[in-house]
Image 1 (tube, rainbow, N blue to C red):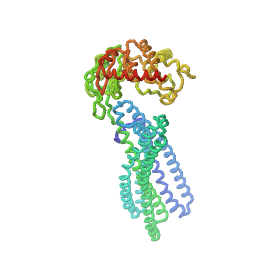
Image 2 (cartoon, one colour):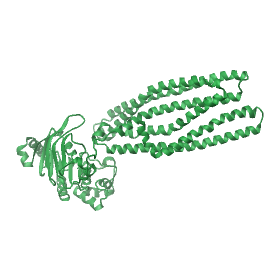
Image 3 (cartoon, rainbow, N blue to C red):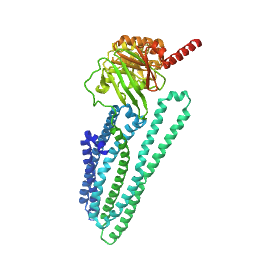
Image 4 (spheres, rainbow, N blue to C red):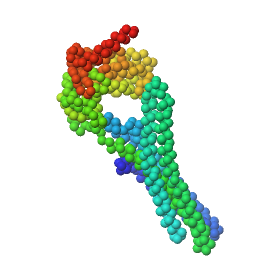
Length: 578
Protein backbone atom coordinates (compact mmCIF):
# COMPACT_ATOMS: atom_id res chain seq x y z
CA UNK A 1 0.00 0.00 0.00
CA UNK A 2 2.71 2.48 1.03
CA UNK A 3 4.79 1.47 -1.98
CA UNK A 4 1.89 2.31 -4.29
CA UNK A 5 1.38 5.71 -2.71
CA UNK A 6 5.16 6.34 -2.67
CA UNK A 7 5.37 5.53 -6.39
CA UNK A 8 3.62 8.84 -7.11
CA UNK A 9 6.40 10.85 -5.42
CA UNK A 10 8.46 10.68 -8.65
CA UNK A 11 8.10 14.30 -9.88
CA UNK A 12 9.08 15.58 -6.41
CA UNK A 13 11.83 13.09 -5.66
CA UNK A 14 14.65 15.66 -6.03
CA UNK A 15 12.87 18.12 -3.73
CA UNK A 16 12.28 15.34 -1.20
CA UNK A 17 15.95 14.27 -1.21
CA UNK A 18 17.18 17.88 -1.01
CA UNK A 19 14.82 18.60 1.89
CA UNK A 20 15.99 15.45 3.70
CA UNK A 21 19.65 16.50 3.26
CA UNK A 22 18.95 20.02 4.61
CA UNK A 23 16.98 18.66 7.56
CA UNK A 24 19.69 16.09 8.32
CA UNK A 25 22.50 18.67 8.16
CA UNK A 26 20.70 21.27 10.26
CA UNK A 27 20.93 19.49 13.66
CA UNK A 28 24.67 18.90 13.23
CA UNK A 29 25.29 22.64 13.66
CA UNK A 30 22.82 22.84 16.52
CA UNK A 31 24.51 19.98 18.35
CA UNK A 32 27.88 21.70 18.22
CA UNK A 33 26.51 24.66 20.18
CA UNK A 34 26.28 22.87 23.62
CA UNK A 35 29.92 21.73 23.26
CA UNK A 36 31.00 25.30 22.49
CA UNK A 37 28.91 26.58 25.39
CA UNK A 38 30.57 24.07 27.75
CA UNK A 39 34.01 25.27 26.57
CA UNK A 40 33.03 28.91 27.14
CA UNK A 41 31.96 28.15 30.74
CA UNK A 42 34.76 25.74 31.68
CA UNK A 43 37.64 27.48 29.86
CA UNK A 44 36.73 31.03 28.85
CA UNK A 45 34.81 32.17 31.93
CA UNK A 46 36.87 30.10 34.36
CA UNK A 47 40.17 31.54 33.04
CA UNK A 48 38.67 34.96 32.23
CA UNK A 49 39.83 34.49 28.62
CA UNK A 50 37.79 37.02 26.61
CA UNK A 51 39.42 36.16 23.30
CA UNK A 52 38.50 32.51 23.75
CA UNK A 53 34.93 33.50 24.68
CA UNK A 54 34.55 35.74 21.59
CA UNK A 55 35.98 33.11 19.21
CA UNK A 56 33.76 30.38 20.56
CA UNK A 57 30.81 32.79 20.61
CA UNK A 58 31.45 33.71 16.96
CA UNK A 59 31.54 30.05 15.97
CA UNK A 60 28.25 29.56 17.85
CA UNK A 61 26.66 32.42 15.86
CA UNK A 62 27.93 30.96 12.55
CA UNK A 63 26.56 27.52 13.47
CA UNK A 64 23.22 29.09 14.41
CA UNK A 65 23.04 31.03 11.11
CA UNK A 66 23.93 27.95 9.05
CA UNK A 67 21.26 25.97 10.91
CA UNK A 68 18.77 28.79 10.23
CA UNK A 69 19.55 28.86 6.49
CA UNK A 70 19.27 25.09 6.22
CA UNK A 71 16.00 25.24 8.16
CA UNK A 72 14.53 27.83 5.75
CA UNK A 73 15.53 25.80 2.68
CA UNK A 74 14.25 22.56 4.20
CA UNK A 75 10.88 24.21 5.02
CA UNK A 76 10.47 25.49 1.46
CA UNK A 77 11.45 22.18 -0.11
CA UNK A 78 9.25 20.21 2.29
CA UNK A 79 6.26 22.46 1.54
CA UNK A 80 6.85 22.05 -2.20
CA UNK A 81 7.14 18.29 -1.86
CA UNK A 82 4.12 17.88 0.46
CA UNK A 83 1.80 20.08 -1.60
CA UNK A 84 3.05 18.50 -4.82
CA UNK A 85 2.41 14.96 -3.60
CA UNK A 86 -1.07 15.99 -2.42
CA UNK A 87 -1.86 17.53 -5.81
CA UNK A 88 -0.50 14.44 -7.60
CA UNK A 89 -2.61 12.07 -5.48
CA UNK A 90 -5.75 14.15 -6.09
CA UNK A 91 -5.03 14.30 -9.83
CA UNK A 92 -4.46 10.55 -10.15
CA UNK A 93 -7.39 9.63 -7.91
CA UNK A 94 -9.74 11.90 -9.86
CA UNK A 95 -8.48 10.43 -13.15
CA UNK A 96 -9.08 6.96 -11.71
CA UNK A 97 -12.65 7.88 -10.81
CA UNK A 98 -13.27 8.95 -14.41
CA UNK A 99 -12.14 5.51 -15.62
CA UNK A 100 -14.51 3.61 -13.32
CA UNK A 101 -17.86 2.33 -14.53
CA UNK A 102 -21.20 2.95 -12.84
CA UNK A 103 -20.98 -0.43 -11.12
CA UNK A 104 -17.51 0.43 -9.75
CA UNK A 105 -18.69 3.77 -8.38
CA UNK A 106 -21.77 2.10 -6.91
CA UNK A 107 -19.42 0.22 -4.53
CA UNK A 108 -18.37 3.53 -2.95
CA UNK A 109 -20.72 6.21 -1.71
CA UNK A 110 -20.23 9.56 -3.40
CA UNK A 111 -19.66 11.21 -0.01
CA UNK A 112 -16.93 8.69 0.75
CA UNK A 113 -15.23 9.32 -2.59
CA UNK A 114 -15.24 13.06 -1.88
CA UNK A 115 -13.63 12.44 1.54
CA UNK A 116 -11.00 10.18 -0.01
CA UNK A 117 -10.24 12.83 -2.61
CA UNK A 118 -9.99 15.71 -0.12
CA UNK A 119 -9.63 14.89 3.59
CA UNK A 120 -7.66 11.65 3.15
CA UNK A 121 -5.26 13.21 0.64
CA UNK A 122 -4.83 16.21 2.95
CA UNK A 123 -3.89 13.85 5.80
CA UNK A 124 -1.21 12.19 3.68
CA UNK A 125 -0.01 15.59 2.47
CA UNK A 126 0.29 16.88 6.04
CA UNK A 127 2.15 13.73 7.08
CA UNK A 128 4.77 14.41 4.39
CA UNK A 129 4.89 18.15 4.98
CA UNK A 130 4.92 18.06 8.78
CA UNK A 131 6.55 14.68 9.33
CA UNK A 132 9.59 14.87 7.03
CA UNK A 133 11.46 17.33 9.25
CA UNK A 134 11.15 15.46 12.57
CA UNK A 135 11.54 12.07 10.84
CA UNK A 136 14.97 13.06 9.45
CA UNK A 137 16.04 15.39 12.23
CA UNK A 138 15.15 13.39 15.32
CA UNK A 139 17.26 10.24 14.70
CA UNK A 140 20.36 12.31 13.87
CA UNK A 141 19.90 14.58 16.88
CA UNK A 142 19.26 11.64 19.16
CA UNK A 143 22.22 9.57 17.92
CA UNK A 144 24.64 12.51 17.99
CA UNK A 145 23.43 13.70 21.40
CA UNK A 146 23.76 10.22 22.91
CA UNK A 147 27.31 9.88 21.55
CA UNK A 148 28.21 13.33 22.91
CA UNK A 149 26.62 12.44 26.28
CA UNK A 150 28.76 9.31 26.54
CA UNK A 151 31.84 11.37 25.68
CA UNK A 152 31.05 13.78 28.51
CA UNK A 153 30.16 11.12 31.11
CA UNK A 154 29.56 7.51 30.12
CA UNK A 155 28.18 6.40 33.51
CA UNK A 156 25.57 9.14 33.64
CA UNK A 157 24.57 8.51 30.00
CA UNK A 158 23.40 5.00 30.96
CA UNK A 159 20.14 6.65 32.04
CA UNK A 160 19.08 6.44 28.38
CA UNK A 161 19.25 2.64 28.57
CA UNK A 162 16.35 2.81 31.03
CA UNK A 163 14.42 5.81 29.64
CA UNK A 164 14.29 4.72 25.96
CA UNK A 165 12.65 1.28 26.50
CA UNK A 166 10.07 2.81 28.87
CA UNK A 167 9.11 5.39 26.24
CA UNK A 168 9.02 2.75 23.49
CA UNK A 169 6.60 0.55 25.50
CA UNK A 170 4.33 3.52 26.24
CA UNK A 171 4.29 4.58 22.58
CA UNK A 172 3.52 1.02 21.43
CA UNK A 173 0.40 0.79 23.59
CA UNK A 174 -0.79 4.28 22.60
CA UNK A 175 -0.43 3.57 18.85
CA UNK A 176 -2.05 0.17 19.27
CA UNK A 177 -5.15 1.82 20.72
CA UNK A 178 -5.31 4.85 18.46
CA UNK A 179 -4.76 3.11 15.08
CA UNK A 180 -8.32 1.72 14.61
CA UNK A 181 -9.76 5.02 15.84
CA UNK A 182 -8.35 6.93 12.86
CA UNK A 183 -10.19 4.64 10.42
CA UNK A 184 -13.42 5.22 12.36
CA UNK A 185 -12.72 8.96 12.31
CA UNK A 186 -12.58 9.06 8.48
CA UNK A 187 -15.74 6.96 8.28
CA UNK A 188 -17.46 9.49 10.55
CA UNK A 189 -16.34 12.27 8.17
CA UNK A 190 -17.90 10.22 5.33
CA UNK A 191 -21.21 10.14 7.17
CA UNK A 192 -21.23 13.90 7.78
CA UNK A 193 -20.45 14.51 4.10
CA UNK A 194 -23.23 12.12 3.07
CA UNK A 195 -25.78 13.92 5.25
CA UNK A 196 -24.78 17.35 3.93
CA UNK A 197 -24.70 16.16 0.32
CA UNK A 198 -28.15 14.56 0.49
CA UNK A 199 -29.63 17.63 2.17
CA UNK A 200 -28.19 20.16 -0.27
CA UNK A 201 -28.97 18.04 -3.34
CA UNK A 202 -32.59 17.63 -2.27
CA UNK A 203 -32.99 21.02 -0.57
CA UNK A 204 -36.16 21.81 -2.54
CA UNK A 205 -37.76 18.54 -1.43
CA UNK A 206 -36.71 19.20 2.16
CA UNK A 207 -38.33 22.63 2.14
CA UNK A 208 -41.41 21.45 0.24
CA UNK A 209 -42.10 18.78 2.86
CA UNK A 210 -40.99 21.05 5.74
CA UNK A 211 -38.41 18.50 6.89
CA UNK A 212 -35.79 21.02 7.99
CA UNK A 213 -35.95 20.03 11.68
CA UNK A 214 -35.64 16.33 10.87
CA UNK A 215 -32.65 16.98 8.59
CA UNK A 216 -31.04 19.09 11.32
CA UNK A 217 -31.50 16.21 13.75
CA UNK A 218 -29.95 13.78 11.25
CA UNK A 219 -26.98 16.10 10.76
CA UNK A 220 -26.65 16.62 14.51
CA UNK A 221 -26.45 12.86 15.03
CA UNK A 222 -23.72 12.48 12.37
CA UNK A 223 -21.89 15.54 13.66
CA UNK A 224 -21.96 14.30 17.27
CA UNK A 225 -20.64 10.92 16.15
CA UNK A 226 -17.75 12.67 14.38
CA UNK A 227 -17.11 14.84 17.45
CA UNK A 228 -17.06 11.85 19.82
CA UNK A 229 -14.82 9.80 17.54
CA UNK A 230 -12.43 12.73 17.09
CA UNK A 231 -12.35 13.46 20.83
CA UNK A 232 -11.74 9.82 21.65
CA UNK A 233 -8.86 9.51 19.18
CA UNK A 234 -7.33 12.85 20.24
CA UNK A 235 -7.58 11.96 23.94
CA UNK A 236 -5.81 8.67 23.33
CA UNK A 237 -3.16 10.24 21.11
CA UNK A 238 -2.63 13.09 23.60
CA UNK A 239 -1.46 10.57 26.21
CA UNK A 240 1.78 10.59 24.27
CA UNK A 241 2.77 14.04 25.55
CA UNK A 242 2.31 13.49 29.33
CA UNK A 243 4.02 10.08 29.02
CA UNK A 244 7.01 11.71 27.34
CA UNK A 245 7.11 14.54 29.87
CA UNK A 246 6.91 12.11 32.79
CA UNK A 247 9.92 10.20 31.55
CA UNK A 248 11.74 13.41 30.56
CA UNK A 249 11.41 15.12 33.94
CA UNK A 250 12.16 11.91 35.84
CA UNK A 251 15.34 11.53 33.76
CA UNK A 252 16.37 15.16 34.37
CA UNK A 253 15.83 14.81 38.14
CA UNK A 254 17.95 11.66 38.21
CA UNK A 255 20.73 13.37 36.23
CA UNK A 256 20.68 16.48 38.42
CA UNK A 257 20.92 14.38 41.56
CA UNK A 258 23.65 12.15 40.19
CA UNK A 259 25.52 15.04 38.53
CA UNK A 260 25.37 17.16 41.69
CA UNK A 261 27.13 14.43 43.64
CA UNK A 262 29.81 14.18 40.92
CA UNK A 263 30.41 17.96 41.04
CA UNK A 264 30.64 17.90 44.84
CA UNK A 265 33.24 15.14 44.67
CA UNK A 266 35.17 16.99 41.94
CA UNK A 267 34.65 14.30 39.29
CA UNK A 268 32.58 16.60 37.05
CA UNK A 269 32.56 20.28 36.21
CA UNK A 270 29.52 22.60 36.07
CA UNK A 271 30.00 23.23 32.32
CA UNK A 272 30.06 19.50 31.64
CA UNK A 273 26.79 19.03 33.54
CA UNK A 274 25.23 21.97 31.66
CA UNK A 275 26.31 20.52 28.31
CA UNK A 276 25.17 17.05 29.36
CA UNK A 277 21.73 18.39 30.32
CA UNK A 278 21.47 20.11 26.92
CA UNK A 279 22.14 16.81 25.19
CA UNK A 280 19.70 15.00 27.46
CA UNK A 281 16.97 17.48 26.53
CA UNK A 282 17.83 17.03 22.84
CA UNK A 283 17.63 13.24 23.16
CA UNK A 284 14.31 13.41 24.95
CA UNK A 285 12.93 16.00 22.51
CA UNK A 286 14.07 13.74 19.66
CA UNK A 287 12.20 10.83 21.21
CA UNK A 288 9.12 13.04 21.54
CA UNK A 289 9.39 14.05 17.86
CA UNK A 290 9.76 10.41 16.83
CA UNK A 291 6.66 9.45 18.82
CA UNK A 292 4.68 12.26 17.16
CA UNK A 293 5.91 11.07 13.76
CA UNK A 294 4.68 7.56 14.55
CA UNK A 295 1.24 8.94 15.49
CA UNK A 296 1.18 11.00 12.28
CA UNK A 297 2.16 7.97 10.19
CA UNK A 298 -0.50 5.88 11.94
CA UNK A 299 -3.19 8.36 10.94
CA UNK A 300 -1.87 8.78 7.39
CA UNK A 301 -1.79 4.98 6.97
CA UNK A 302 -5.54 4.87 7.57
CA UNK A 303 -6.00 7.49 4.84
CA UNK A 304 -3.48 5.73 2.55
CA UNK A 305 -5.50 2.56 2.89
CA UNK A 306 -8.70 4.34 1.81
CA UNK A 307 -6.97 6.06 -1.13
CA UNK A 308 -5.40 2.75 -2.18
CA UNK A 309 -8.86 1.15 -2.27
CA UNK A 310 -9.79 3.60 -5.04
CA UNK A 311 -6.47 3.10 -6.85
CA UNK A 312 -6.83 -0.69 -6.66
CA UNK A 313 -10.41 -0.75 -7.92
CA UNK A 314 -10.33 -2.55 -11.26
CA UNK A 315 -12.68 -0.97 -13.84
CA UNK A 316 -15.43 -3.38 -14.85
CA UNK A 317 -15.38 -1.93 -18.36
CA UNK A 318 -12.32 -1.64 -20.57
CA UNK A 319 -11.30 -1.58 -24.22
CA UNK A 320 -9.32 -4.84 -24.10
CA UNK A 321 -11.48 -6.37 -26.87
CA UNK A 322 -11.82 -3.18 -28.89
CA UNK A 323 -10.71 -2.89 -32.50
CA UNK A 324 -10.61 0.06 -34.86
CA UNK A 325 -14.28 -0.58 -35.77
CA UNK A 326 -16.43 2.46 -36.53
CA UNK A 327 -20.22 2.84 -36.19
CA UNK A 328 -21.44 3.68 -39.69
CA UNK A 329 -25.18 3.03 -39.75
CA UNK A 330 -26.74 2.52 -36.32
CA UNK A 331 -28.23 -0.98 -36.54
CA UNK A 332 -28.84 -2.42 -33.04
CA UNK A 333 -29.52 -5.97 -31.96
CA UNK A 334 -30.09 -7.49 -28.53
CA UNK A 335 -29.39 -11.20 -28.72
CA UNK A 336 -30.46 -13.32 -25.70
CA UNK A 337 -29.48 -10.45 -23.39
CA UNK A 338 -29.75 -10.67 -19.62
CA UNK A 339 -28.45 -8.31 -16.95
CA UNK A 340 -28.15 -8.11 -13.17
CA UNK A 341 -26.80 -5.50 -10.76
CA UNK A 342 -24.73 -6.31 -7.68
CA UNK A 343 -27.82 -7.63 -5.90
CA UNK A 344 -27.57 -10.84 -7.96
CA UNK A 345 -31.16 -10.66 -9.23
CA UNK A 346 -31.74 -10.44 -12.96
CA UNK A 347 -33.47 -7.21 -13.98
CA UNK A 348 -33.38 -8.08 -17.69
CA UNK A 349 -33.99 -11.56 -19.09
CA UNK A 350 -34.25 -13.12 -22.56
CA UNK A 351 -34.10 -9.83 -24.46
CA UNK A 352 -34.16 -10.33 -28.22
CA UNK A 353 -34.72 -7.22 -30.30
CA UNK A 354 -33.60 -5.97 -33.71
CA UNK A 355 -33.60 -2.23 -34.51
CA UNK A 356 -32.73 -1.20 -38.07
CA UNK A 357 -30.67 1.89 -38.87
CA UNK A 358 -32.78 5.03 -39.17
CA UNK A 359 -35.78 3.54 -37.34
CA UNK A 360 -37.63 5.33 -34.58
CA UNK A 361 -38.40 2.89 -31.78
CA UNK A 362 -40.51 3.63 -28.71
CA UNK A 363 -40.16 1.73 -25.45
CA UNK A 364 -42.99 1.76 -22.92
CA UNK A 365 -43.93 -0.23 -19.88
CA UNK A 366 -44.84 0.01 -16.22
CA UNK A 367 -42.48 1.70 -13.77
CA UNK A 368 -39.65 -0.65 -12.81
CA UNK A 369 -39.73 -2.70 -16.01
CA UNK A 370 -36.00 -1.89 -16.63
CA UNK A 371 -36.49 0.24 -19.73
CA UNK A 372 -33.60 2.57 -18.79
CA UNK A 373 -31.34 -0.35 -17.97
CA UNK A 374 -31.96 -1.81 -21.43
CA UNK A 375 -30.82 1.29 -23.35
CA UNK A 376 -27.82 1.84 -21.06
CA UNK A 377 -26.36 -1.41 -22.42
CA UNK A 378 -26.05 0.12 -25.92
CA UNK A 379 -23.28 2.65 -25.12
CA UNK A 380 -21.81 0.22 -22.54
CA UNK A 381 -22.65 2.22 -19.46
CA UNK A 382 -23.03 -1.32 -18.12
CA UNK A 383 -21.95 -4.63 -19.62
CA UNK A 384 -24.42 -7.44 -20.21
CA UNK A 385 -24.46 -10.35 -17.77
CA UNK A 386 -25.42 -12.72 -20.56
CA UNK A 387 -25.97 -12.62 -24.30
CA UNK A 388 -24.61 -9.87 -26.52
CA UNK A 389 -25.52 -6.38 -27.73
CA UNK A 390 -24.52 -5.66 -31.33
CA UNK A 391 -24.21 -2.36 -33.18
CA UNK A 392 -23.84 -2.59 -36.95
CA UNK A 393 -23.49 -6.35 -36.53
CA UNK A 394 -20.50 -6.10 -34.17
CA UNK A 395 -20.53 -6.71 -30.39
CA UNK A 396 -20.30 -3.39 -28.56
CA UNK A 397 -17.10 -4.63 -26.89
CA UNK A 398 -15.36 -4.35 -30.27
CA UNK A 399 -15.79 -0.57 -30.28
CA UNK A 400 -13.75 1.72 -28.08
CA UNK A 401 -15.98 3.16 -25.36
CA UNK A 402 -15.13 6.70 -26.42
CA UNK A 403 -16.19 6.11 -30.03
CA UNK A 404 -19.27 4.07 -29.06
CA UNK A 405 -20.52 6.74 -26.66
CA UNK A 406 -19.88 9.47 -29.19
CA UNK A 407 -21.90 7.47 -31.73
CA UNK A 408 -24.74 6.65 -29.31
CA UNK A 409 -25.83 9.90 -27.67
CA UNK A 410 -28.12 9.71 -24.65
CA UNK A 411 -30.44 12.23 -23.04
CA UNK A 412 -30.91 10.79 -19.56
CA UNK A 413 -33.86 10.99 -17.17
CA UNK A 414 -31.94 13.31 -14.85
CA UNK A 415 -31.13 16.41 -16.87
CA UNK A 416 -27.66 17.36 -15.68
CA UNK A 417 -26.23 20.77 -16.50
CA UNK A 418 -22.96 22.11 -15.19
CA UNK A 419 -21.95 25.43 -13.69
CA UNK A 420 -21.04 27.71 -16.58
CA UNK A 421 -22.77 29.39 -19.51
CA UNK A 422 -25.45 27.82 -21.69
CA UNK A 423 -22.98 27.90 -24.58
CA UNK A 424 -20.36 26.01 -22.54
CA UNK A 425 -22.91 23.37 -21.60
CA UNK A 426 -24.01 22.94 -25.21
CA UNK A 427 -20.42 22.54 -26.37
CA UNK A 428 -20.19 19.31 -24.39
CA UNK A 429 -21.81 17.88 -27.51
CA UNK A 430 -19.11 19.35 -29.79
CA UNK A 431 -16.46 21.65 -28.37
CA UNK A 432 -15.68 22.95 -31.88
CA UNK A 433 -19.28 23.76 -32.79
CA UNK A 434 -19.87 27.16 -34.41
CA UNK A 435 -22.46 29.66 -33.18
CA UNK A 436 -24.58 28.79 -36.22
CA UNK A 437 -24.56 25.06 -35.37
CA UNK A 438 -25.41 25.80 -31.74
CA UNK A 439 -28.35 27.99 -32.76
CA UNK A 440 -29.55 25.37 -35.26
CA UNK A 441 -29.73 22.53 -32.68
CA UNK A 442 -31.39 24.85 -30.18
CA UNK A 443 -34.07 25.73 -32.73
CA UNK A 444 -34.57 22.01 -33.37
CA UNK A 445 -34.93 21.40 -29.62
CA UNK A 446 -37.28 24.41 -29.25
CA UNK A 447 -34.77 26.08 -26.93
CA UNK A 448 -33.64 29.06 -29.03
CA UNK A 449 -36.59 31.32 -28.21
CA UNK A 450 -36.31 31.16 -24.41
CA UNK A 451 -32.49 31.36 -24.53
CA UNK A 452 -32.64 34.45 -26.78
CA UNK A 453 -35.13 36.08 -24.41
CA UNK A 454 -32.58 35.93 -21.59
CA UNK A 455 -30.50 39.02 -20.91
CA UNK A 456 -27.19 37.38 -21.85
CA UNK A 457 -28.61 34.89 -24.35
CA UNK A 458 -26.31 31.92 -24.91
CA UNK A 459 -23.81 33.44 -22.47
CA UNK A 460 -26.30 33.27 -19.60
CA UNK A 461 -24.60 31.85 -16.52
CA UNK A 462 -26.15 28.69 -15.11
CA UNK A 463 -25.94 27.85 -11.45
CA UNK A 464 -25.06 24.38 -10.20
CA UNK A 465 -27.27 21.86 -11.99
CA UNK A 466 -29.00 24.65 -13.92
CA UNK A 467 -31.00 25.79 -10.89
CA UNK A 468 -32.04 29.01 -12.64
CA UNK A 469 -33.90 27.09 -15.37
CA UNK A 470 -37.23 25.27 -15.33
CA UNK A 471 -37.42 21.52 -15.81
CA UNK A 472 -38.63 21.84 -19.40
CA UNK A 473 -35.91 24.36 -20.27
CA UNK A 474 -33.21 22.05 -18.88
CA UNK A 475 -34.60 19.13 -20.88
CA UNK A 476 -34.55 21.10 -24.12
CA UNK A 477 -30.95 22.28 -23.58
CA UNK A 478 -29.92 18.66 -22.86
CA UNK A 479 -31.63 17.54 -26.08
CA UNK A 480 -29.81 20.26 -28.05
CA UNK A 481 -26.53 19.19 -26.48
CA UNK A 482 -27.10 15.60 -27.60
CA UNK A 483 -28.06 16.66 -31.13
CA UNK A 484 -24.83 18.64 -31.48
CA UNK A 485 -22.91 15.34 -31.45
CA UNK A 486 -24.69 14.26 -34.66
CA UNK A 487 -24.83 10.67 -33.40
CA UNK A 488 -25.75 7.54 -35.35
CA UNK A 489 -27.94 6.45 -32.43
CA UNK A 490 -30.01 8.88 -30.37
CA UNK A 491 -31.58 7.69 -27.10
CA UNK A 492 -34.22 9.67 -25.21
CA UNK A 493 -34.74 8.26 -21.71
CA UNK A 494 -38.02 9.90 -20.71
CA UNK A 495 -36.33 13.19 -21.57
CA UNK A 496 -39.42 15.14 -22.64
CA UNK A 497 -41.49 14.48 -19.53
CA UNK A 498 -41.40 18.17 -18.51
CA UNK A 499 -42.35 19.38 -22.00
CA UNK A 500 -45.94 19.86 -23.19
CA UNK A 501 -47.23 17.63 -25.99
CA UNK A 502 -47.26 20.41 -28.61
CA UNK A 503 -43.61 21.34 -27.97
CA UNK A 504 -42.72 17.64 -27.88
CA UNK A 505 -44.28 17.17 -31.33
CA UNK A 506 -42.25 20.12 -32.69
CA UNK A 507 -39.06 18.64 -31.20
CA UNK A 508 -39.82 15.22 -32.68
CA UNK A 509 -40.46 16.69 -36.11
CA UNK A 510 -37.35 18.89 -35.93
CA UNK A 511 -35.11 15.94 -34.98
CA UNK A 512 -36.45 13.86 -37.89
CA UNK A 513 -35.43 16.65 -40.27
CA UNK A 514 -32.11 17.46 -38.58
CA UNK A 515 -30.94 13.81 -38.24
CA UNK A 516 -32.94 11.88 -40.86
CA UNK A 517 -30.71 8.77 -40.92
CA UNK A 518 -30.20 8.49 -37.17
CA UNK A 519 -31.61 5.56 -35.20
CA UNK A 520 -33.86 7.00 -32.50
CA UNK A 521 -34.95 5.19 -29.34
CA UNK A 522 -37.55 6.91 -27.17
CA UNK A 523 -38.37 5.73 -23.66
CA UNK A 524 -41.57 7.43 -22.53
CA UNK A 525 -44.36 7.22 -20.02
CA UNK A 526 -46.79 8.96 -22.38
CA UNK A 527 -48.15 6.89 -25.25
CA UNK A 528 -48.44 10.11 -27.28
CA UNK A 529 -44.63 10.35 -27.26
CA UNK A 530 -44.16 7.02 -29.06
CA UNK A 531 -47.39 6.33 -30.97
CA UNK A 532 -45.83 7.65 -34.21
CA UNK A 533 -42.72 5.43 -33.91
CA UNK A 534 -41.93 2.82 -36.54
CA UNK A 535 -42.33 0.19 -33.86
CA UNK A 536 -43.06 0.16 -30.15
CA UNK A 537 -41.51 -2.21 -27.61
CA UNK A 538 -43.60 -3.06 -24.55
CA UNK A 539 -41.67 -4.20 -21.47
CA UNK A 540 -42.80 -5.69 -18.18
CA UNK A 541 -40.67 -7.06 -15.32
CA UNK A 542 -37.48 -6.96 -17.35
CA UNK A 543 -38.85 -8.81 -20.38
CA UNK A 544 -40.17 -7.78 -23.78
CA UNK A 545 -43.87 -8.73 -23.88
CA UNK A 546 -44.75 -7.30 -27.28
CA UNK A 547 -43.37 -5.43 -30.28
CA UNK A 548 -45.50 -3.70 -32.89
CA UNK A 549 -47.14 -0.50 -34.10
CA UNK A 550 -49.53 1.60 -32.08
CA UNK A 551 -52.64 0.24 -33.80
CA UNK A 552 -51.42 -3.33 -33.69
CA UNK A 553 -50.53 -3.22 -29.99
CA UNK A 554 -53.92 -1.76 -29.10
CA UNK A 555 -55.44 -4.95 -30.53
CA UNK A 556 -52.89 -7.50 -29.32
CA UNK A 557 -51.21 -6.26 -26.10
CA UNK A 558 -53.24 -5.88 -22.90
CA UNK A 559 -50.47 -3.98 -21.06
CA UNK A 560 -50.17 -1.41 -23.84
CA UNK A 561 -53.93 -1.06 -24.13
CA UNK A 562 -54.27 -0.58 -20.37
CA UNK A 563 -51.61 2.18 -20.34
CA UNK A 564 -53.23 3.89 -23.33
CA UNK A 565 -56.76 3.75 -21.91
CA UNK A 566 -55.67 5.04 -18.49
CA UNK A 567 -53.86 8.00 -20.09
CA UNK A 568 -56.75 8.79 -22.41
CA UNK A 569 -59.14 8.68 -19.49
CA UNK A 570 -56.87 11.03 -17.53
CA UNK A 571 -56.69 13.46 -20.48
CA UNK A 572 -60.49 13.45 -20.77
CA UNK A 573 -60.89 14.21 -17.06
CA UNK A 574 -58.40 17.07 -17.36
CA UNK A 575 -60.32 18.55 -20.29
CA UNK A 576 -63.57 18.39 -18.30
CA UNK A 577 -61.87 20.09 -15.35
CA UNK A 578 -60.72 22.90 -17.62
